[in-house]
Image (cartoon, rainbow, N blue to C red):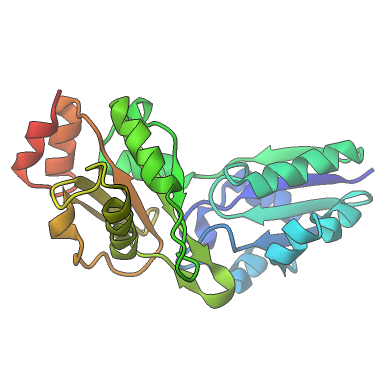
Length: 267
């Protein structure tokens, strides 16, 4: 009998894989990697393949979602098969679905966890992880349609005094990665339509770029100041804070170079 092992790759490059993950990759009979659910800024598949002494095949969204990962499952029925995933393997529902299907087909599964973008960004910001509410993805607009889901999630979290973690959309096929300023423009357009006074020029914002790299960009401030702030290359992540603990406020000022006026958000 074969097995399927989901291995988290971490956040930045091929050196982020854990020793355990690399060991499992080295002893695998078949290895796949997907790169459409998240961007690893400096990952080299060739370097990773040399580290592992293994050929690694790239699978796209079509193979994993529309074909239900059949190419991976067929290998895993008879051989030790690994799927390499950016970040932590089970953050994306795609990978959960693949694991469920594997178990239904009698394929043993295991998970080797990796660094998660969520814990990394929360930690870099200095905001307390237990004060986050529901997370949400801000998607690219489709023609004239802009999803109002991010606005509604932020609104509900703020009612509860909770921060909102915003994933920013990715179109890996087109190498298009949403930036923080694009996300803020989308939220402002939603405010124009919904008029609930949730997103304004004075809304507190925390932006994080390239988490996991040697020089991540972490900046807190008011929307009007960050709208044109240069966070550099992606991947970008956005947080909309709510009420702050005094330690969170100090962290945003000291660690995220935010203005001292942030202290007025302390409750």
